[in-house]
Length: 101
Image (cartoon, rainbow, N blue to C red):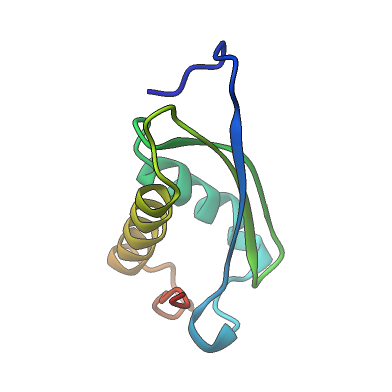
């Protein structure tokens, strides 16, 4: 679990882009996307501290939990956020697929 009083802080800047850098993320939906990313991130892995997007790419600052791994945090965050985006598509938006890598 995330502990704000720990002596060690593992901060990671994650940059995510849509597959083929497709322009799928209108700036008007930044708050919606941030909510999906926060909800998708398990507390046992990491906490989302900062979010920035203006279309593509998306920048996220994470603080990894003491036992959390970067791989687990990114996989959970990106996978679940795309799945939820696609399950509840906003009218006029295309399905979301993140670039692998």
